[in-house]
Length: 363
Image (tube, rainbow, N blue to C red; front, side, top):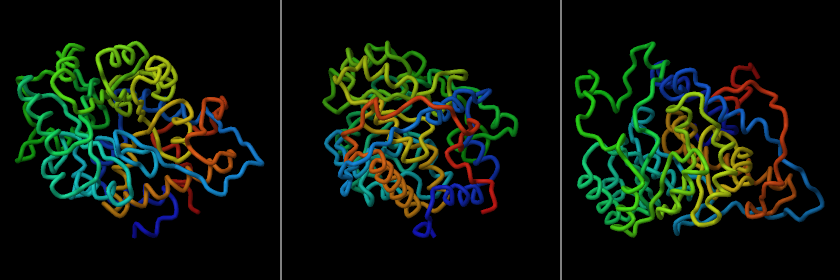
């Protein structure tokens, strides 16, 4: 069925029909009032693309290289915890889609199978993302194993100092899979965790010990982007966890220009948060991102049909990117710059799925 999708909206509709209410709300929900999540979408909806004509767009290039990997489109499968909730193959199904289509995967440490099993089964370029729940020796051992397994980089998520309150889950007493014991009861909180105590000195120690490129995810302001580069971070990842951590935060797209200016070419820049369409990818690249991460969209595709649906999702993104670049008079994503986007009024109410306005229409 995945090969029959003609639009991304069809994929979302099928995913919704496959998921229970708890899993659906876990995926689309965010922290507290969900304001940050809505701002992520609103930032994209408030930008227009500039159309130019009379340029040769008979061929349009969407390719980009990141950490030595040639990407067919500048899109990464972002780290989603418990992907196995949405399709039993979990991270391996996503990795096979990344390999088949030609993009990179960032595998979450709360996703199965683990990175060592995954790299034995699949040759997709991989970055491993870690939530730190042990001591520093434990973490350093994992980084070394990630390097030995052939990972292209190691991603440290910085914006989970504490776990947020997600009221959609709390109202239903829903416990995500990663928080459950084998019998289904809530898992006790770890007694030893470095996550709230992580500091820039930890980043420096990682860089001093390993050559593996370091990705720091959760950068949300220019000041921290500057500190990240100063401490040797190779990839600055602008993210607010899809609005699932800090409530009343700023949209990632609004943060992006300041981060790009602070980084000043000394590191690569990724961004995620609300990206649903090829035009969203174009807007992020125009504002200076080297590539984008898709998280909820990845999980929706997984729920719609596993590996084939994720491949089809990436194909549709590629089609949307190429068509809209051509209509902007551009023959390559490398021609994008901030002047390609213009401020505009949003024509839809901000919502986690506002990129798909026909979802509830009978067409």
